[in-house]
Amino acid sequence: MIYRILTGTIKYDGSQIAPLWAYDMGIEGDSIVIFHGPMDVTPDNMKDLEDRKAKKTIRGDQLIHIIVERFDSPASMRLAYYMQRLLIVCIKDTLDKHGIKTIRNGDDLFIDDRKLTVSIASAGVSSEKIHCGINITTQGTPDDVKTAALEEFGIKEWETLAQEIARTFVHEYGDIESDIVKTKSL
Image 1 (cartoon, rainbow, N blue to C red):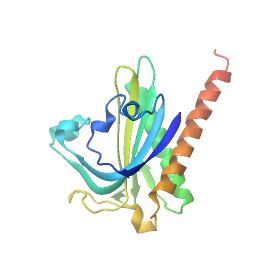
Image 2: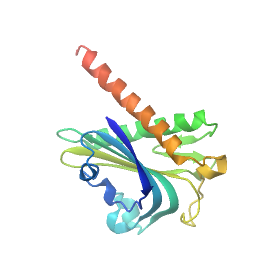
Image 3: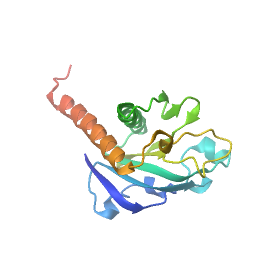
Image 4: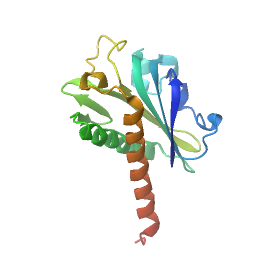
């Protein structure tokens, strides 16, 4: 698995979870692509059917966005969600190293009772996809959700944190793949 940190600001609107989004930028194969920018996911681009049915919007003025794509045939919704949890654990471990203590509840990270992340996993015909957004600031987040943000803990260099998260995830992913190929089946 390769990782890329994109420069410049990119707005996440949900379309980036489409298959082969990274390929259109020349990133081939299993990948983790990280960028920063606002988020505005309307019900039209929402994958979570409960949120879509409730006509929720998912917003924020400034987040770190992590897009993971893993190719498999056939792709599996179950594996997408397992991989999503692995990503969240890698983010939690990285934040812990920076002294930011989070609580994981399913596929979300919280600081006290305030939500730090948003995340979704899905699968298509040939790949599993994950999006995770980490609030850099709480500005622009929905009024009905208590949120936390990295800026409260002195994180100003999002790129450094993004690289640490990507390296941690790529290492864990590679370690799992290595274990698979060296283990005799039952």
